[in-house]
Length: 257
Image (spheres, rainbow, N blue to C red):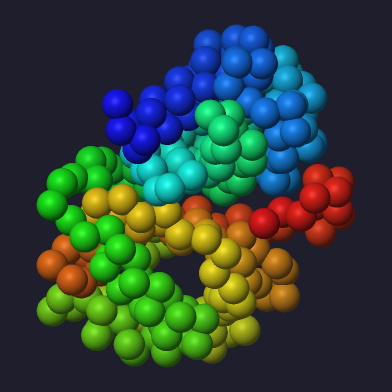
């Protein structure tokens, strides 16, 4: 069994047993005693996960995409029973010595399909074979720094093919023109999406997940964005952008990122 396959199996099994089967013994079998929790929804450590599961007996999780990159495993899917409406987004785990040692997440309410009829979860799910993950990562990081951190929105055109960009964000329709217009409009009204730092990437096959931070209207936010690369161009985007509660106890204890 390859390392990638082993990590995929370990994390997906742990995630399923804990959040869908509500088997608390998964904490002893799959998680490190020194587990670090970054989610603003959960207090730090295994105690926080135990309390979360016990407080939400109807919680279920449906995974759609799983990416593995070195010691990181990202799951893109939907929680039900965790809030009053389904939550969609990303769970990101770090594994060390065959145990889960760290977790981040970005979850947003499930929304209606966007103007192009796309949902937050539909589209390709398999990373695929024959892709150069490192080349895709380099492309996305270069794009990310130029277009998002530096704010050169017009440069989206250089990284997409003939103005095509499949968009799963609830607020934006397909197309490069649509995303540029959306970002420009937000910036002109003082509600712009500011990106300050790219913390980590997860690249497998045709997918690259970026986990970054910035601010919207002065409020600190965490950005999880999943990019699909096709023929050396960015072709598709899913995202989950969430505010960071500065007074959250977990944030002060060990850092949200």
